[in-house]
Amino acid sequence: MDTKFLLGENQIPTHWYNVIPDLPGPPAPVLHPGTGKPIGPQDLLPLFPMGLIEQEVSSERWIKIPDPVREALRVWRPSPLFRARRLEAALKTPAKIYYKYEGVSPAGSHKPNTAVPQAYYNKIFGTKRIATETGAGQWGTSMAMASQMFGLECTVYMVKVSFEQKPYRKSMMQLWGAKVIASPSNLTNAGRGILAKDPNNQGSLGIAISEAVEDAATHDDTRYALGSVLNHVCMHQTVIGLEAKEQMKLAGDYPDVVIGCHGGGSNFAGIAFPFVADKSAGKKVRIVAVEPTSCPTLTKGVYAFDYGDTAKMAPIAKMYTLGHDFMPPGIHAGGLRYHGASPLVSQLLHAGVIEARAVPQLASFDAAVQFARTELIIPAPESSHAIRGAIDEALRAKEEGKERTILFNLSGHGHVDMAAYDAYFAGQLEDFEYPAEKVKESLAHLPKVG
Ligand SMILES: *Cc1c(COP(=O)(O)O)cnc(C)c1O
Image (cartoon, helix red, strand yellow):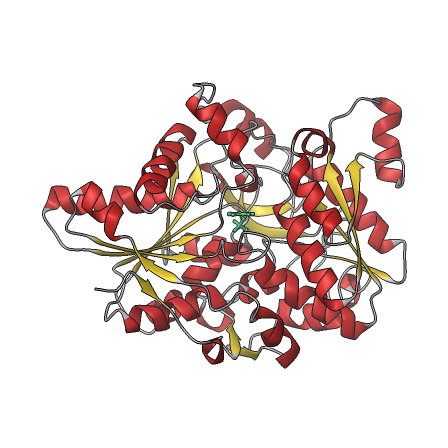
């Protein structure tokens, strides 16, 4: 009985899947943060190359992956699909659990799946330098790696507290040739403004975004890159689900439930959207996004127009949101702390095509430890939310005495997150209650549009 289901390099998908034609209705417009009017491609050109802007608004179901991108993806794709036989045995469940493992990329997560095409479209557009932000560093490392592959310079504004306390991803970015700057910095107006008020400001993702956007907007040869949320990012990630479908065929199975952890929505979209296509064609499959209870965007947020960033510089999109000034607690799954969600994921949730649930931090670490002690791969704290979701489905199957086929996405490994495991074993982690008051306050600040 096979444990791994592997595809050859010639089975790397030839096309990305765009979910827009299979949505239950047309997507809501994206609005200009200053005027509140719908934005067009021209408004995005200072920030993104044309190739990506076209993908952002495309309603073609299949978009060809350019040969140089497919060539670059060969470094680690296709990624393996595993049957979690040891975990199943430990759970004594009748359920079958499969997981797609994205930690095999050089950066250790799914993020290079979009960093590579973003670098490529910038290269052919004539971009010389990428400016981007990173929190704990997963996106920065991925963009540094992809920039290295396509001969671009890369400047990463890294949230200062992570820059100082989580040095290893900074080292990885520097190794791949990126310039890493602690944010807030004195290189931008946004950063200087904040430092003038508070010289010891520890930074935030919102501030780092503002710095990277300003850098790109004020330099002709520089463009901005975002690692999640946007339509083209979700589309680039569909290589995950497209491969997984082929691998499930090899295993002679089809999932009853597909699970992904959810921060901004990109790895969830990657595993889920190809199954949304099946569902819209009439197939029966449940699709579940799992988020932390401390940042419960999908389960406790509202579906409304909101700014993409704290500084109100990013476009306004209709999405599930906790409010653009919502400040989530400092949980260890740093990649799941965004106030909003992908507009595509949001629309599917609102229409009832997909489901969402929230799990507490300790329960997700419990799941991560059980997984590492059976399947042996050390999961990223973010990915552990998907593991929790899968284990809970398997335990429910056991209670009900039913067979069930579960597929989840293991979005990355946790080798650079061992401090989080140390804190867990030292009993230093806590669960964060849903800060209902704070969310209510933030939701009062939504833009009055739409
Ligand atoms: C960034 C990250 C996430 C969260 O981002 P999404 O866009 O929601 O996928 C999840 N897992 C890992 C390993 C990450 O690095």
